[in-house]
Image (cartoon, rainbow, N blue to C red; front, side):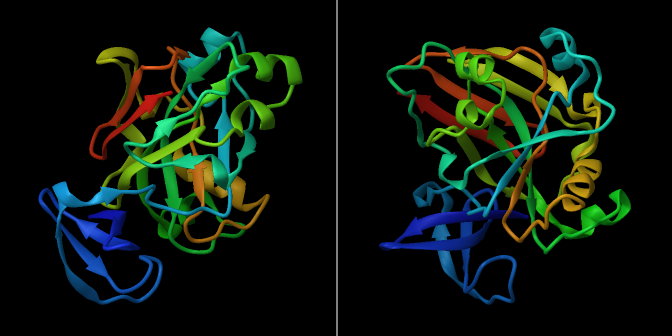
Length: 249
């Protein structure tokens, strides 16, 4: 099942999508809802599928990425936050600030919470997850290196593309993940290369802070990160989920 959030008739609505149609629902997907009409999927203006109160990200969570960055394999997850205002949906623009010289793409698998999660074990985590989406942890590499911490480098508006929807019927532990710039593959890996699985990450984060319905956990990026420039089209494609496409301006 694909959970979507769309702009429809001057309103923002949640729905459930198949290959051709969106079934509008009466409430958020985290609550009890009733079906309320149909919209052809090609006519639906897709928005970011979730409005998180927080986006918790894992750094250095693929073995290949740890090697390319010269990092040791971490003994426990390294986490940081992106603000909710960094979220932009499928088809939205990634806006590079004029004073930033090097802004990189980082294709990632996103976990979207469906239930309040606090102090979970890894075995419990899947029961609190709504589903999975594509994401791009856009990063100012210069600021990341200059600041020594990552909030400013990763926190600009539009620096968290998310979408195109939340796929509820997929096992996240061994999916192909790829990032393309103007149709050319730049990242290609499998989620099985993660150091900590999505379930381990949700458990770890839930023991630090309570996760709420709609919150997002980003699971790290594989090797192959690189810069984007204005005019580029960036696509993050994940097996079993779909493609998130954004233009850089």
